[in-house]
Amino acid sequence: MAEPVVSVVIAAYNAGETLGCTLASVLAQTHDSLEVVVVDDGSTDDTAEIIERAAAGDDRVSPVSYGGNRGRSFARNEGMRQSTGEWIAVVDADDLLAHTRFEQMLAAASRFPSTRLITDDRIGWRLDHLGFVHVEHRFCARHTWRLGGPRPLDRRHHFTDRFGHLDMFVRRDFWESTGVQYPDDMARCEDLCVYNSLLFWPDDPEPVRVAQPTYYYRLAPTSRAGGGPAALSDMARRAVETTGSDELAELSRRYQPAHSWLYRREDAKMAAAGRLGDPQAAEPLVPITPDAKVGAPALVGLKALQLLGRFSDRTANPLIAQDIARQLERTV
Image (cartoon, rainbow, N blue to C red):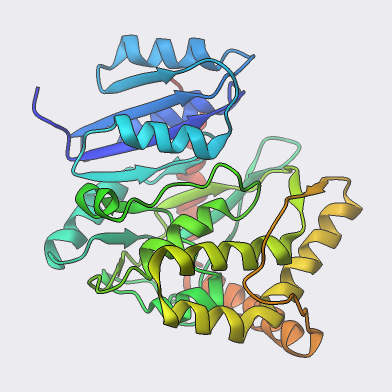
């Protein structure tokens, strides 16, 4: 068989309630030159059975297991190592995709042939207690609140407004040449560490954004390690050490007081809900100095951007909700 164009890597741990729908969503992509590498990270529920059923029904599914629970970072790294596609996409085991997601990303790659890193727009959704789908908001920034066609991504504003968050779609040769890995000793911000290391890799062609909400991100109650401000600064330290990027170091120092205040506020909300775990050990890039004078205006700005996104998406959101509802009725 010819090597696939896209490798989708899914790390799954006790994901029995959601994994079947996620796999069905990925396998229904309009671009079908795929392999789906599903890593069972020592699940104790029916996750393994779901993966086996999917592999039996579609030879594009490649199960991976190694026994024991090694953590999401280890599972993602292992899945990426065992994948073979020209492009690698990382998808969470409870999220869904617009059916044309990879088709649109590959079209962007054709339009910008030098790019090696592509992102789309993430839109949050949740189920209410009656099982109805609610589309919440798109995770947009000052330079990304408008929808449209593919265009270069302003990485500086992407970092300052959204902390460099991407849903990774990366060329394999780029990922392999950097040696970037998910750090399995981080309990928080490990994905940001990878994304920012790739985003600020020296001499890399400009990344590209597909300006469409094609990644459906499930907003669900989860627990999280504490120490968000320190974890964020530790992430920046690691990414700067990996890339040698003076630009990233300067941005991290300049915006640390605002970002740290936002993360400390998030920690307080999680603690009030009883969902905040012990803080991870962290070695910050700079001393942590949360500052409400810059953090509060940043929060107001983020909320305003969400409202702009809602206004921009007012026609698309009902259709997205219908698409999600239909996809939740399908499983492997």
